[in-house]
Structures are given as C-alpha cells and as structure tokens.
Image (cartoon, rainbow, N blue to C red; front, side, top):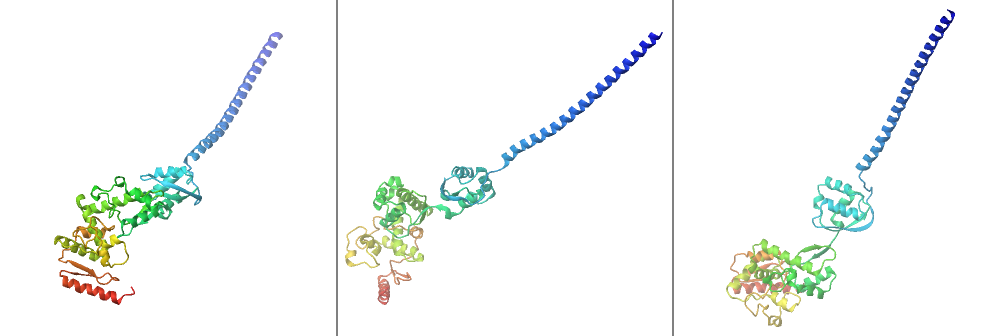
Length: 373
C-alpha cells in the first residue's frame, strides 16, 4: 500500500513539473517573439528613414537647377545664329561656359516676354553668368559686336568703294575686284554690269569678318527692295535710278524733289537738253556747285549740256525720297529751276526762259552778297 501511494505521489509531482516547464518555455518564446518583433519594428523604422533620406537625396539632385550667382567674369564672344531657338541659345551659352545649366537659361527665357526679340549676331559676354543676367546681356544691343556702315545719299561709286574698304579692312582695289563679279553680287541684268546707283545709301550692320561682296550684295538687294516697294518694273529700274540720281544731286530740300523730277521729264518730253551741272561734276569730280566753260565742254554722253536725253546711267546713289520723286513727279509745266540761296536751299522754277534768267540773276546777287561763304 505504501508503495502504491508513494508511486502515485511521485507521478503527480512529475506531471506538475513538466507542466511548469512547458509554461516557462511558452513564456520564454512569447518574450522572444515580442523582442524579435520589437527589434524588427525598430529596424524597419530605421530602414525606412534611411530609404526616405536616400530617395530624397535623388529627388533633391533631380529638381535643383544649377545656376551661377553673379554677373560673371572674364570676356568671351558667343555667336547667336539666325533662327536660333531658346534651346539653341542655351546650348551655345552652356558650351561656352557662360551659364551653369541650359535649364536655368530656359527658365529665364520663358519668364521674359522679350526673349523672342534677341537679334542674331556676335555678342560680348562673361563666363559663369547667372542665367537671367546672360539673357539680359543678349537683349542689350550694346553687347553686340557689329560692323556698322552709313552710306550717304548723293555720292558716286568710288566713294562707296572706299567706305566698304574701311568697313571690311580690305583695300579699295579688293573692293573693286569683288565688284566685277556682278553675278555673285546679284546685280540685275538691266544694270548692264554698272554698279553706279545700285548701292542703296543707308545704314547697315554686319557681323565681324564681313566681306566686300557681302556688303555690296546687301546694298544691291536693298535697292531692289525699294524699287519694288514703289512698283518699278524691272525694265524701268535703270531709268528710274538715273532720274533719281539727278534729283538727288540737284535737290536741296525734300519738297523740291518731285518738282525737279517734273522739270527733267518735261525737258525730255520736249527734246531739250537737260543742262545739269551735276552731270558735268560727275565727269570732272571738281568741288563746288559751279561749272566752268571748260568743264561744260567735256565730251561725254554724261555731259547733259552737250547731249540730249538722260546720261547713260545713274551718277550717284539716290535715297528713297528721290526714287519716289522719279516714280511720282509733280505735275508742272516748269522747264527751268535754279537754287537761289545756297544756304537755305531755296529753289525757284520757271516755264519761260526770261523768268529763269531773272531767277539766275537772283542767285548771282546772292553769291555776290555772300562771297565769303
């Protein structure tokens, strides 16, 4: 009996012990699970923060637009080509080291409504310029590197040759040589190879390195443009330019141009010699407004004292006002004109020779009173 009770007591105690051990193991596993979970949460949070910062660094790099801060340093010349877009200009400036990024310039370009007015050409710039400053430099005409030439009205071809030589750094001989290739210059056939009167007087701008051929070609094209503007047919161009050149040399005031043109046409219609001192001066190249008997005796088809009709071609470069007068002369019956005051340019007209002689006397009286002029 005793053994039986002892065995039973032992068995009960063993079961309780094993149950307690299992409970301890389960409690330990729960603690481990909680610890692992907590560690995992912490690691996940840390990892997420690192990942966020890592990705954020990419985002910051992608959205930040590189740009310089100041107005730049040093000097450099850049060329903006004709037809260049904002993107083209940005690439040009970036390649030249003017701006830090193309995107910075494009942003400034899109924000400025004047951007589209940038003129092609050569520009003086600085390196490392803030994009908006670079754009402002392109919009400032004083930064352009241009070669400018002003051709006055009423000058003969040789004068224009010298001005073109001065502009291009060429010799006058080089300019004359370039002038011989009239096909390359675009000189119309009706000019018959004579550039006189076809180099339109005006102010022109060219880029560095411009050649005499390029200058003359542009001037000839401008003459054609003006003639076309006034509806001059190709077959009438040479005559219109010839009359316009006479008007240019004879008229002192714009108001006189269409009237002088009418005198020229009236005399031509009546078969009268034009008798213009300007055509004689074209031959002799002497100074002053008066012509001598010897000068008027010069035998040349350009001498309108000696030969009837128009001279063979223009005697000077005519401006648009004179061309317009040649196309649309005033309606008069005048056959004579004379400038009676060389200071003011006052000109008087006459239909009768006797009246003209009275006007000539007025000029002589003025000249006598102003002999020191």
